[in-house]
Each structure stands twice: as C-alpha cells, then as structure tokens.
Length: 226
Image 1 (cartoon, one colour):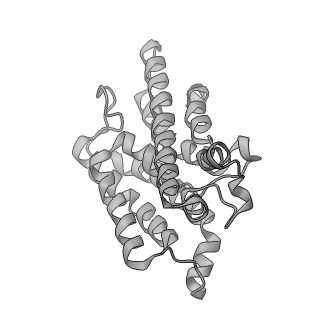
Image 2 (tube, rainbow, N blue to C red):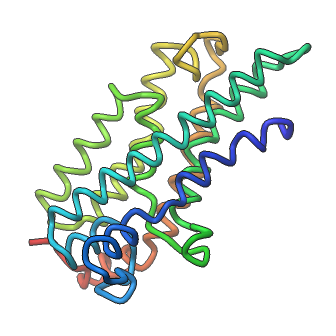
C-alpha cells in the first residue's frame, strides 16, 4: 500500500485549496479569518459576505474534494495497470482512503498554516465521485436538518454520520469501490470492512472539528442561520 502514497497527494493538495479565503480576498479584499467564527468555510463566508457567496464557497469546496479524488484515482489506476504483480486489495484500500485525504487537506491546509474548514463540503464532493446516487441521501439530510433546525452544524454532523449507510448501499449493489472501469471487485462479503475504513475516520474527524459546535448545541448556545 505504501507504494501508492505519492499518488494520494493530489487529493490532499487540491482539498487544501482555501476556497472561502480566496473568495474573500479576490472579491472583497478581506480576510475571512478576521470575521465571525474566523473559519474559512461556507457558513462563515455566507454570514460575512452574504448567502450567495456562502453557496459559492460550498460549491467550490465540494468541487475541490471531487477533483482531488478524481486526480488521485486516475493516477493510481494508471500505476496499477503498469504493475507486474498487482494487488487489487491494496488498491481498493488505498482508493477507499482518498476522501479522507481530501478532507484532511480541507481541514489542515498547508496554505493556511495548517488550519482550515470543518470538512463537510469536501466530504460531500469526494464521496460524490464514488457514489452520486446515494450521496443524495446525505445531501437531503443536510438540507432538511438545516431547514428544520436552523443549525448548519447539526446538519453537517447528521449528514456525515449517514456516510456508512450510503457507502454500504452503493457497495452492496455494485460490489466494487472503483466505479469507472470495474477492474477491482470485492467478494460478496468483503465490502463492509472497506465501508468502515472509508467512512469512520471521516466521521471521527468531522465530529472533532465540530467539537465546539457540539458543546454549544448541548448548551443551547449554538448560532442559528436566518
């Protein structure tokens, strides 16, 4: 598996592009880190510069997650085709970790002194690459929770916790983790460990990044959107 680490870097580096920061600097000549929650994510951008720009940031963060996984995926599969003794299980495992590296780049951007957003938009984008159909479940849960509760953080947490379900449904149907050319397949009972490897680290990371939000939700002090 360590032979593939170099090809994971694009997922991390593209994930680390600070969309909200760049948008604020380019359009408003302001550093988003000096306003509101000081976070570079779409929620703080929307509260600071207007909801339109929050949605743009959300889209850009999803796009970079998608593109990061797309580039790394194609590099990995190209390398795999050249190996004399390919190991599909190692390839499957490596590719299952690509969303995690895209989200880590978003949360700990080297361009932002190893700080960043809270990872949910990048999570959505990176998983859409594998599984657009079932990711609609997560996106719907995200939007419905926010509409009903007015808490973006609660929508983020609930939708992220649904990732094991959506990945399970996808893999149960397709029995593969690489959807493009179908070269690498799981056995009928082998996909559940990959679901856990792919989703649990991201859930733990997102919960950690939202730890202050969770505390405020418990205390009834979390900010609501209008």
